[in-house]
Image (cartoon, rainbow, N blue to C red; front, side, top):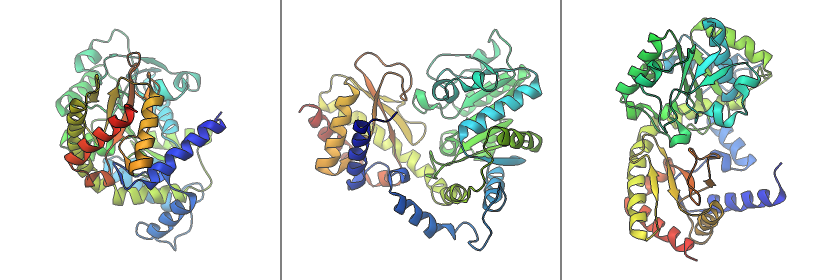
Length: 387
């Protein structure tokens, strides 16, 4: 339950972030209802015929989105889901039925293990095993030598809670081959797959071709309203549609989410390589700024970033860092950091006592920052910590 104090703190943060003249990323979810509706109405005609009928239990703009994503990922078919959690759980239970093995190999920091309340077991009767607990995806050797059988290997690309980390292309292809040697199918949790192409130096379709099925999200990287797509063989997707209805995910109309997803594919997807490249500049300047600031310790993880997102760790309490971040935004108009977390809740592996972590996203607004701008912002931020 959200308390009044938590609501007030959120309002304060949103007010400060929205008023900032400089920030590394502007997020549509920070906008008002009127702003989001106006933006959607203004852009909708550029991605879909406004004279088309609205969707009813699919079809129309929803089907258009499904065809578009299936083509981008080089898959036979795709189905739109209201949430990625639902899409992924259904994909994994469908594969369990087809392989006859209800065991899924995944990372202990993956989304189903940390953020879905144990749903794989509670809802679908699936069991999970962990080829590695290191803060990275498993290696081919770890997959090949895991002592228990499993029917599906799920790989989260990037592994968000370890710092948005990715393997090399050679490591990824080797781990997929190791799973195939064990007669396991491969599913990609590609919630943020869109920004992985620069790191791998491959097109999205070539990356997705390694997996039997892929799930992608529309609000995490593309700034959509909500929604996800599961893509794969047509027979799997048709089965997933049946389970989508059983899970309560066949919504009457979804055109706002589908339109915003198409807008994200048009506007944000082509810009992601620039965000990924500039994130390396920002991360390097952050490290330089903290090294010169006199803070007792810091970590930028990974350095350089693999995508346009990465973590920063500092040896202070989350409340102290949140207050410094929001005061910097309020008093200087510069939002360098947003939310901070202590421990493993939403911030990756368990942190040492007294250490907190934030996730940094570099998007369109961040392209305006030079390395000097970042270093100056760090110095200002550390000044608020000293007050």
